[in-house]
Image (cartoon, rainbow, N blue to C red; front, top):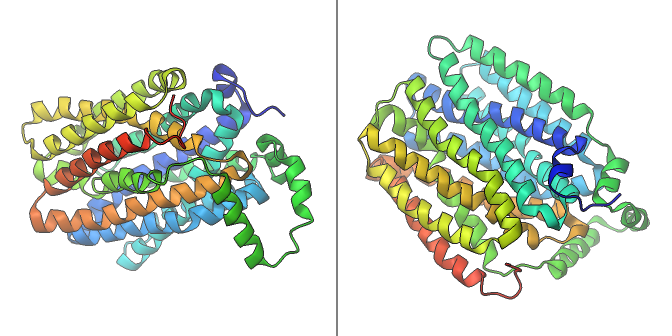
Length: 416
């Protein structure tokens, strides 16, 4: 099977469509839980501090991050269906726990399960989508993947805010129905043999079967050596991946607190502000992704990092609701430039032979940034005020902009 198809054919691939549907439903549920339900519940019902909420939510990222690298390796060998189905069912279990148990220990268990359950999502979706798209449509397919992610993770909190205005019961019913649908779609993902065909690695798999009797330690060492020797990345890309998600992790745990306690937005008002930023980002992804495929990643990342480094601190200091809306829209525009270009840049560094494992490794580095950002975010809020996570996030992004200037000069990263 040819692994390089472009544009329209990528978007009509049944396999890619399955991945995008699963991505949307799972991220809808995750966004609703992590942004709207759990922070409010832990703050208003359990009376936890922002620091404690940040730690609880960080457990989700820790669970997610701990399994991404090994899951990427497993995807290369076990196929998409088994890996993704286990993850979806664990996420389903987390929703059920939060719906029927209200003690802190169970909430902590649910946070961990959400992390572990969603850990296969990104390695599976990105590995499968980039395998189908090939290098000629890398920016476009990344835009599509992130559109499914942003639509799900953005609409989830917006929709749930309307449901939880009076009662959590209908909200949990909706989330359970969505997880049932995601589980059904996952059952029809390709198994091991078809996954290898999609990856174009069937011959390699047959050759590799004769080596599976080697000791596990030797296989791991050989695997790491092979991946390391086949990477096409500047070493500066590794801290850059960490910083990019660290800046985002600083904001995720405190966005709802900021909207509810600083701006004093009601749930439906908060939904509108989320929609403003999310809509700008989502609408910009496809045209930016196509432009990245045509012109390269450099200038989109320059513009995105600079824009976000200015608008995020501005958002943290703004209290006038009329000014908050355009600032949020500018943040969304900045990330519309960053998302497809950044992931296309990373995709260029990944060897085809170990695509799943290397994506898992890269996502682990990014996830570590999310974990540390989530933990420090609440501490900054409690110690220095609500503006501090936004300010530090902006400083990290301007540092990332400078780092990217050096990355684009490295000949080991192909930037057209």
